Length: 90
Image (cartoon, rainbow, N blue to C red; front, side):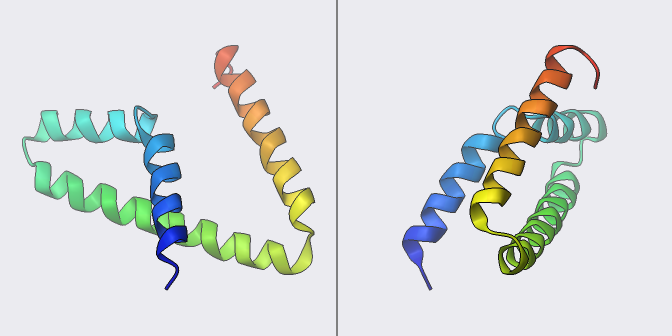
């Protein structure tokens, strides 16, 4: 078990998720349903599932595509998504 990797992954994901649409959706659902535990469980399961998919895809890509290309494609996708959000395309 690599505790340093666990801590750095936690930190990166925690900071990335603060104030994003997922957190806002969870706050809205919790406020409107008055059932915070149910919303927490659903949101936690969703995040765990999405993370598992990301880890599986990342592991598979690393075996087929060089890491430098994966990083460049990911960076380009972040830029495209950021521009789309900035220009109100999404």
